Image 1 (cartoon, one colour):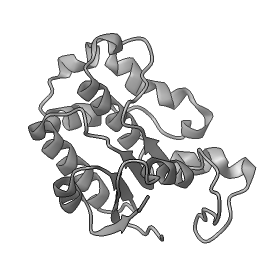
Image 2: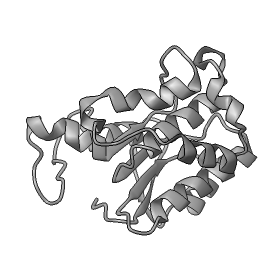
Image 3: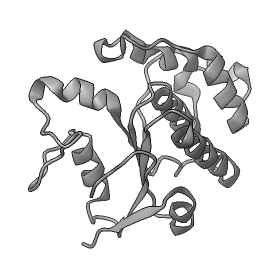
Length: 191
C-alpha cells in the first residue's frame, strides 16, 4: 500500500480482520509482523518517530479527552514539543464547528459531559488543526447521527483537498456506503 498526496483510501473487512491493527501499524503505534512503514521512501529512525506521528495522526473510534472544556482540549496539543511550531487558531475551529452544525458555545462544554459522537468531533478537530499529512480514521463517525456523519465526511474531504496541501486519508468503516463517499482507493482485509 502506498499513500500519496490527495489519496483517500478505504480499508474494509470483517470484524477481526486487522483493520485497526493496520492503522495502528501505519501510525507506528504497533509493530508490524512483517514489512515496514516507509516515510518519503525512507525507513523511520527511532528519533524521528515523534515528527512522523505529528505528520500521521491516528483517530481511534473511542477518543480520549482531557478534563476540562472542549476549548482546552483543542488547545492542549500545542503544549507538546512536536507541535511547537503550530498555534491554536480558534477562528478556524469556529468555522469548522459551524460547518458541522455546532455553535461556539460547544467550546465551553465540559469534556466529561460529551456524548460519544461529540467526543469524536472534538478528536477530529484536534487532529485536523495540527494539519497532518495523513489522517488515519478508525470508525471515526460510528457514534454520530447520519446528518453529522455526512457533514464530517464533507469537512474531511474539503480538508484533504485544500489548495497548497499534500494531505491524504485512510478510513476504516463498516459502512460500505460511507467508504464509497470518502475514498477513491480501497483495500480488503480477509480473516
